[in-house]
Length: 405
Ligand code: AMP
Ligand code: MG
Image (cartoon, rainbow, N blue to C red; front, side, top):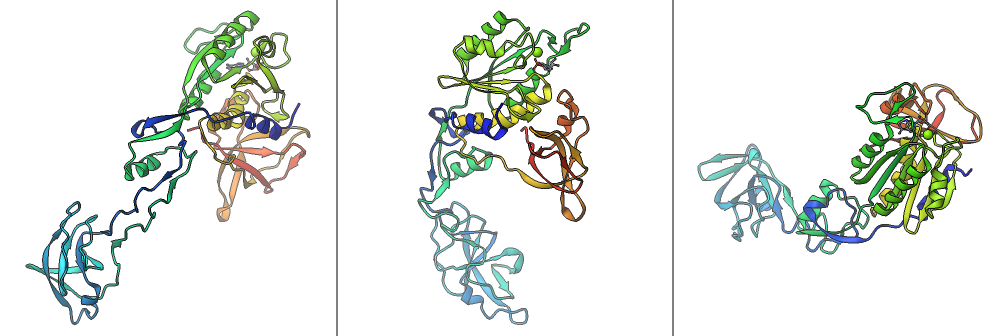
């Protein structure tokens, strides 16, 4: 049996980002960048107005007050995308619209709400400062500045930013293809009729949903009974189809737990089996060439938490992520908790603000590893460290916020 951190490390050191392809920007949402993107020009590209108003020379309005306002004649309009390079004479204002280039000679824009309009003139009754309401060229990024780093997730704002600098396509990492094999003779498909002793297979639905939520396709899913030959056939097909194979169930020490044997038969090299964590002790991890193989226990809570804590980071790294590990943050526990020494326990919790804005973690009811209710309503995982046997109410614990989507 190995420690949880060691399990994470052994997976991590064997995970390399998948090959790179070029993808149309419009289709790249959810992929990871495989290149550093620099700005090909300053951003903003040119000095522009931030408001609808009037461009002036600020010194012309220096003495304007409510008591002695100054009148400006309005000479022409500068609309967005108009390249007319109006040049301003002293004492004149130019009508300007948001996003339009600042006419040369102007160094400030006054909002239209702050002037009084009389015919073809405006009256300004207060001074304005140089640069007011102007977005200066290069104020956000100079030309050549790093805009988005390699490994970044292509979120909507990142995609918008790449479009801002004119990108039509990007280099991204391929995403891992995953195959799932769920084993257990007691399992039936939801929707079918159950006989005594049978249960619905919830891990297929849960794991496929967890994959879908992070934009990773599940290429193949197969449910088999506790039968060595059937299991071996399914896992062989899974290894042929996918970069990552996940099996659920049959990895413990029961009489019909064939998963490890099947992996061995198919040439998968075991990297670890059994982790000092609860839930999830029987977790298995192996490799075959560059393919990664995870055997999660069948208990539904263990299966999904193992996915979240062990498999998901690997899937993200395969997809090109260089993000640091997910943060554990300190919170106060709402009630005393106890356990035996020797295994780290991951409790399902509900984190929220307590008195004075303190972060409080409430252990959810139903902490057994077959009880899905707690995980279904949890928004965090509470870490109960291996060596500890008790954490008293109000003491600090480390929690990890739980996002499935
Ligand atoms: P196993 O890991 O095969 O020993 O299964 C542990 C427990 O999880 C047993 O109570 C199984 O009935 C249950 N279980 C296994 N696979 C699933 C599944 N796919 N969906 C729901 N429960 C499961
Ligand atoms: Mg089983």
